[in-house]
Length: 114
Image (cartoon, rainbow, N blue to C red; front, side):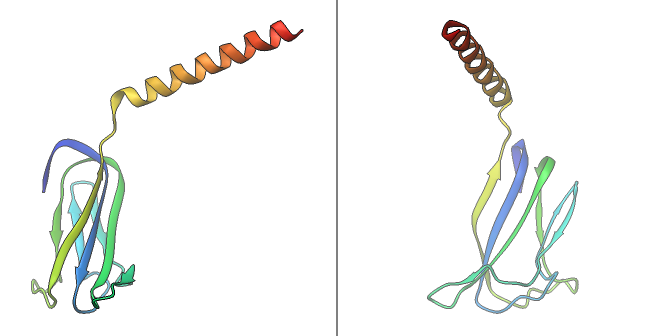
């Protein structure tokens, strides 16, 4: 997967019909590799088993889903609910301005009360 804008975070839910071993599913990025724990997040009513892998931090511009070290996928799978977070440049600025205005308003209100 390649992303138009670098991501701050990436998460993938894998739904399989068979149990997965630790390390059998991996996300590989330039920042490093995330290994699946082999511990299911949940079991769906239809018997599907959900595993989640995610990473945060850095500037993720591409990621690859990789499977067992032997190169064989020993289970049927579906990737669902790809979650990404792209940092918005103006978010910090807007938050800072809002907090500064609230502080100025509170200070003015305190001066008037005295």
